[in-house]
Image (cartoon, rainbow, N blue to C red; front, top):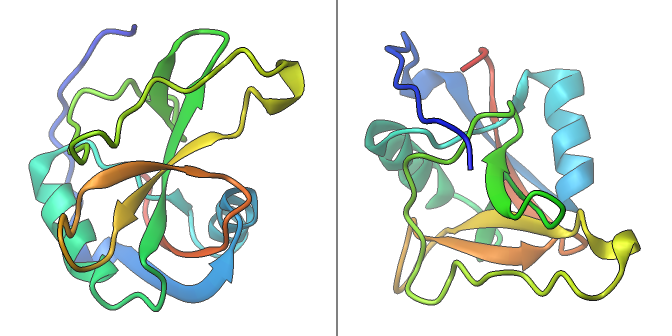
Length: 141
């Protein structure tokens, strides 16, 4: 696991955009990179609050964020390559992915935020092929 370095970001809630289109995780990542900056990285409690508020407006039960798991390295990390230092996993939501199903599936573990109901704002692991709304950043984090 990497080292956690806490930086002061001049980042605000208006830099987050909820996209009301349902896309797979990779499609969402590509969309964010083409039209904004990237999928959101939830690196602090403050960003978590902003993401939770944006997610409430989603049409899907969960929204994609820029969280992925590497079976090869054995840990979760953000799209911007930062180590996960802050987390908000739902009880039972952070399961260690089954990495025994072959190399072709080793990039398929990604994270989403619950957009409503019980556990609103909590993180869960979802299959990357699921189609969900997603949150992009309009400025580098």
